[in-house]
Image (spheres, rainbow, N blue to C red):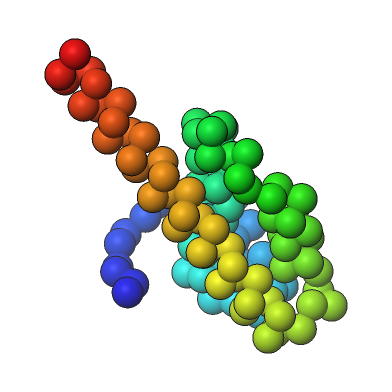
Length: 109
């Protein structure tokens, strides 16, 4: 389910996202979600190295390359985006559990 939020971006961020969205035939919002998921994945793998060893980084790198390749057809691009969302959700769930556990450890030594 999508929820509406107001996010302020710098001009260069906006221009970059617009170009990427247009180039990949995606909406601006979809492009923001894709890059956010990419960031969550990369940050999650750094913060949760125990989880990162279960992530196929070569596969993610290949998906990123294929997803930004102008020759990739629309159907394949949508499957790539779905896979990216799925992987980002998995690592985010793990990330949140780690943050909750760390918080509990600080509060209740």
